[in-house]
Structure formats: structure tokens, C-alpha cells
Length: 158
Length: 195
Image 1 (cartoon, each protein chain N blue to C red):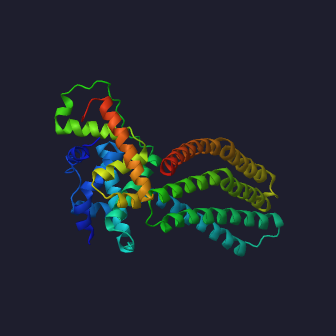
Image 2: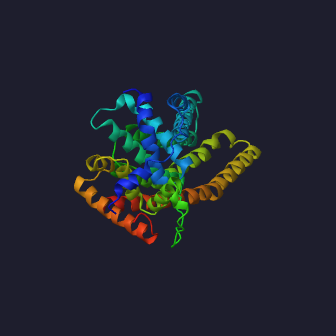
Image 3: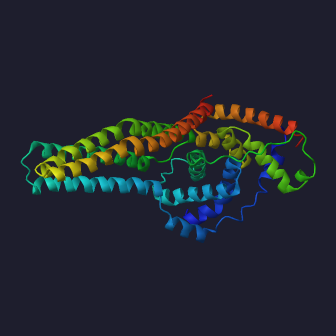
């Protein structure tokens, strides 16, 4: 598969995963670009030991984890206890609310839920994070619980 | 939360049209240069040039005093320490291939610990060799002329004092704080993976 094809196919997914991790569109865009710079440089040495999607998501999520070196702070917006209904009525409002809830999770949980929302199979997520399938299943269950509590607290998505 | 599909639907509404198209992306990757790796490469090249010059001096300038030979040897040792350490850290990044988040966090933790060791130990040893080398190397050239002797040693000593007691502690403090913060964050992420 050539670079441009890979970019067209995966860049929207990578951007969304980076956005889920960092909750800032500009930084997510930078992380997406950094990911594809690595893809470009290492495409020749890709050994097909894993699926190409696993390889690209690994690069992207490792880049996200590396963002701590640049002192990038995840944009966490303090959510008020009672949220008015109006802002979340729109798709954009709902998406912002979802990003803010994810931003309150820990780093690895943010990566796992973002990959889940991208519809990646749990076995592939396990390969990206470096955990067993069983561990990922447990973590996914816990993340769902954490998110459910957050949604419940803020009276959303019931 | 049994409505994961609703969340997926919301998730997919994120606008991605601000991303560059594939042609623009190809231009971006072609122009890209990794500044951090370039900095280390420049340091390695500078150290190699320093060592090469010193070796050339050893063969061209036939000194009669042991202090000069000792000075040359010390400066060469300092250069070799710099080359070996930085070349090693460069190679670690080039050797790093496909790895999971868990392996990557371990790699970063190890890198930060190595960096901490570099600032605390390796850099001190290299600077000690270089400073001592410079002080003893100068002696042969200036010991016959007392004015030149005082001027050269005063300048060198003031320079070394500024470097050791003002510049280095400032840089060290800043770097040390940054590295410690990063080690703590990485340790925290590592704990999340392993719990």
C-alpha cells in the first residue's frame, strides 16, 4: 500500500484518536502529522509482523504518550454539576461533552476508549497497548463504568 | 452504559477536513527535520572534530613537557566520553522499531533515567577531564612569560568558575526538574498499564 493511500484511509481515524487523547484540535492535528511522518520514514522497514492498522495506531498512540515530554496538557474542562440542556442538543455540543468526559480519564484509558470508539477489535487494541486480551476486556469494562458514572453525574446519555 | 453505539455515532461526527490532503502531507514529510536528533548529531560531530583536532595537535606540536601531553590526553578522553554517550543515545532511537504502548513507555522511562545519569555523572566527569586538561595543557605555552601566564590562567579559571558554578547549576536544575516530572508521569502511565 502506498503512503498516500494509507494517509487517506487512516488520517481521519488517527485524528479522532489523537483528539480523544489530547482534547485539543490543533495538538491533535500536529500529532496526526507526526504519526504520518513516522509512517513515511518507516514504511520500507514495516515487516508485516502485525496488521498495518495496528502498526499505524501504535505509532499514533505512542506519539500521544510522548506528548507529555512537550508538557502538553490535556484540555480538561471542569464540568458543572448540572449542565444546561441546550449546548449538548447539537452534534457539536454532544461531541465536546464526550471529549470532556474522556479527558477526565487516565492516559491509557483515554487511548483504549478512543480505539474502541474507532471500532477496533479488542484483540487489536491489546496488541497496540501491549496487554493481553483478557486485561483489555477488564479495562474496557472499567472504562465503561467510569464513563457511565460521569454521564450520570452530568445527566447525559441516559 | 449500554449505548456505546450512540457514542460511536457522536464520535464519528468529529470534523477532519482541517487535515492537510495527501499531496500536502507528502510535502510536509519531505521538509520535516527532527530538531532533537539534529541537535545530538551536531554535538557528536562537534566532539569528533574536537578529538580529531587534538589528535592532530599531538602529532604536529611536539611538546617537551608531560603536562601538555596529559592535557591533550584529558581533552581527548572528554571528547570520547561525549561521542560515546551521545552516539549511544542516537542509536537507541534509530534501533527503536515497532513497539506497543507498554514497551514504548518502558523505553521512555529508561531514556529519562539515562538522561538523569548523564546530567548527574557523565557530564560532570567529562567536564572535569576537559577543565583539568585545559589547565595543564596551557602551562607549557605560557609558563615562561609571567604576564601571559597570569592573563591566560585568570581568564581560563574565571571561565571555568562561571561554567561550573553559574551556568551548569542553572541548566542542571531546570533539566533535572523537567526530567523528574517526566519520570513521574511515565511511572504513573506505567502503573496504569500494569494495574
